[in-house]
Image (cartoon, rainbow, N blue to C red):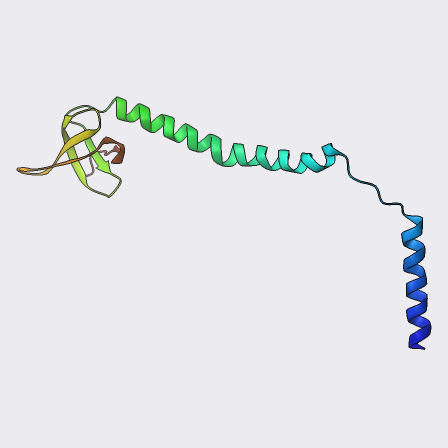
Length: 112
């Protein structure tokens, strides 16, 4: 019985192979899925990240003395001085630190 079943399946498989000629997919069929993945990746990852970086650069350009800020490490302070790359921040009475301007996360609204 097992021999008869295996011969039947081998015969059916051989007929299916002979009946369906194999063809190569066109270049469009090969490249199209990659294009779709890139478009999705662009709109979900690259574009929002570029917009966020542009907004942060604009924020740093508008930073001025007296602004209350929060650094990316969580330090709250007031801007006391600015240079091209660095910001002097007062975090307590007579305590000033110098950090990279790029590490300023954002403005802080007064919380009471």
